[in-house]
Length: 152
Image 1 (tube, rainbow, N blue to C red):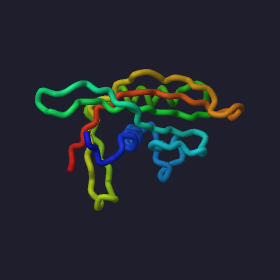
Image 2: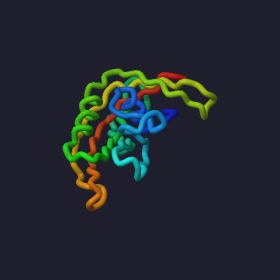
Image 3: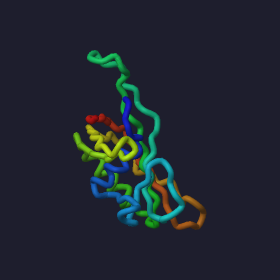
Image 4: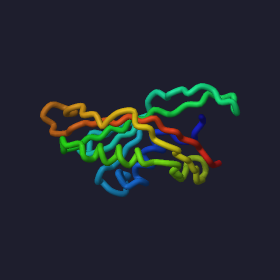
């Protein structure tokens, strides 16, 4: 599975598209970041790629079929985990969602992806505070993503 964009960026953009996250450049309320979590703002969402699940070969193709491992980490001032549950519910409802990402690095072209499903493996899991006495609570949700690039 060769994708133009990192799966972390694809799922971050999906969260924005679903209305449960924002891009920092557009809104500071629940910004989402691919791969690296900055120290600020206090309330943030980070999407990371984890190990894929190999499903074996396909009778129609010689390539190995796999689902991409995705971890969504939520840092919140609220210990209730409401935001993590909102994200989990939104991703659970994904069925054949299309997502377009404009790729300025490759000549300002639009790349379309299809996210067939997001299979929740576990979570939201409460991890505790990110630093002692910080008041910032951490939650993770783990998924297996079925992603496909449609164009170009």
